[in-house]
Image (cartoon, rainbow, N blue to C red; front, side, top):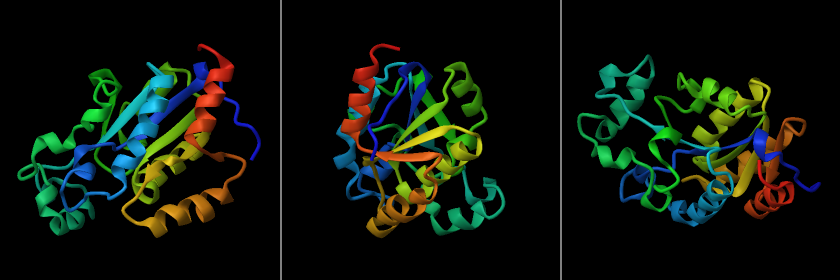
Amino acid sequence: MARLVLNPGRTVHLAIDMQRVFADDTAWQMADFHAIVPHVAAIAAALPGRTLFSRFVVPHSAEHARGHWQNYYRRWPAFTGAVLDPGLIEVVDALAHHATPDTLIDKPTYSIFEARDCTQRLAALQADTLVFTGVETDVCVLASLIAAVDRGFRVVAVADALGSSSRAGHEATLQHVLTRLPDQVEIAFTADVLAALAAAGPA
């Protein structure tokens, strides 16, 4: 892989769904969640003011969801607003000092671009490069990443800062799906991102 080059003033870090609902003892818990937290935190610290945290938010009930999302929440009734502990929607404590209210983007579906203010916030930050971390690699991250590609962004997927409850899905996304988009997506590691930001100097 060629050496990663980043312009800090045009780069935004999107940390996808680093929430307690995927970290704590729930049916959505991801076994490797805590292993990626230090990597997400390191990139957030290296891009202060240029890290946005998405939160996957749930409807009050299945009937409040759109279309076939109703089927999804009928399968997962414990993860509707009428039942779910609202604290589980919050970003995990280890990232809370980075995830201040002005950095949060709430999304009702898989892609962060379904949040109404996502595109405007990226435009305000003059972003042309998006660095992706978070969960799950093969679901919300992938949906967000493909939407970013469709909108013309350069994308960097940080392999050791991504995770999934499906190891096969995680590996297939990194090894077989994203490698089909070599002109738009680069796969890197946290050390590569930090080195590129350090080499570029302050934004």
